Image (cartoon, rainbow, N blue to C red; front, side, top):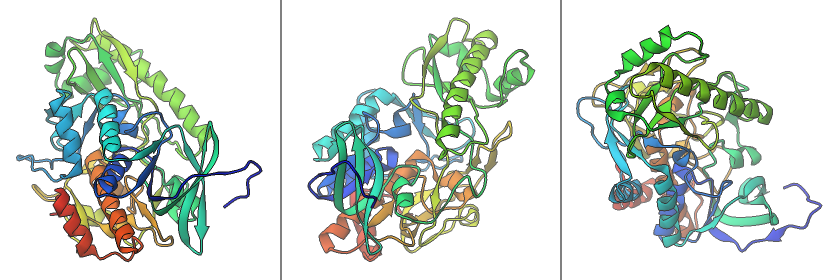
Length: 428
């Protein structure tokens, strides 16, 4: 820990500290609190959900692709989805790329649902707070240093869950990882929504027709000649995944700042293209941009096991499985298209608990897209459904660690799998 000239404010120790409240962190915090643990959640924004609540979005990974949409994520994530449907703020949507049936939802409702679930289970939420350092004693993570408008805080915990997306806590703790400095990472995307769309006409434009219109368009700067625009639960509203900002290191703030500007500029171009060229969009308008540019890949830690491309395409099974995935490898590289590789029809692979455990630091669990995986495996396992499943596993593991006075590395895997099944998780 660095010595600070400003006096640290010491917060009461918590049992489980979750850093980041995206789909992984929110689920981890809710799970640990549901199991009776004292949980503190640290979030840099003023709302929960991270990328899941940026613009109208879709939970992928709940169902495998193929002829039959078999469900492979369950438990606490079902509570979230159920509340979205009860609020009439979600729809099931077939995916045009075949990545599996998706659950498209209104993010404004999701912000409230995440938050109400967390508060109802007793989670203590610290918004507008950023982890800037860690407290380490003899290779054991004891807590973090937070910065916010009120000052600098020290928050100690029995177990810390890093769900920051970028593995910020792990990196600050000296955990080894891979990033854009080692090999190119996937491109970044600013999503946006179009309002006042004639949805009935817009839906008749097939994927290949849309892509052909992009290919033939002149006078527009469209770096990606594909992408998707799809229906939402809201009348007259369509949401896009089109922009592509490439060759960016998301961990470099100068590059990330440049990417934010580029993503917004691209969004204006793509919206202009839609209005000028695509049936159903003639009277539409750009209705909103994502809170920040979407980062698909940054740090990936080196853990007790590293999920590999071969694990994915061979539908590998593991004795310490804590979640299941059937999503294809979906790599948004620097080119104008996207690389897809599918598992055999109807198959899934399992995500081992060891992928959430860093090699070198006790009391730390990783959840979400910064898990231990190679580039190709990551391009499959990063779906929000799997991030929620990993968060559920991390929250349950942290709870067991606290109750049994063990580290996350030493808990009995059968105990964790039994607890996950009681919660409703799907492990095979």
